[in-house]
Image 1 (cartoon, rainbow, N blue to C red):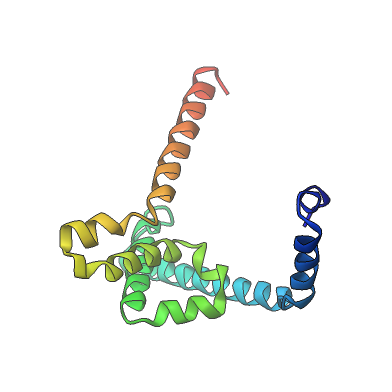
Image 2: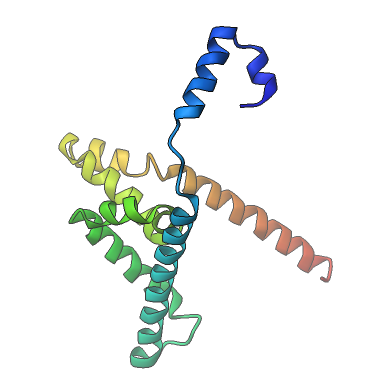
Length: 158
């Protein structure tokens, strides 16, 4: 806690803050980092393997194989979420499962599963993008800004 925040606290509150901080469990940062790295790397390696299958057996080129590869990863993630496996995996792996597209698919599928008792329209469809909506909004906005910059740079001859 910074000194600026500590100054606003009463002496009793400061004493409690120090007491709580001394008893806070130490986080295994290195282990968490290693698990996240391994999980994210495994997901990316799986994606690379799926892309290789599309290139080798279905005649896609590297660029065209990207879309079906992402679709297969999303389907796998949604199925694992539906069977309750992805959440268990995510608890152990941490951010390694949240960052790739599989984490995004998991967040949408989890919200849909959780609210299915409220009906398909107000429950599943209405709540599905509640958690992931901000990712979609800012992703679309960022893509718009990048497109404007690209068009401007192309018009200027860069």
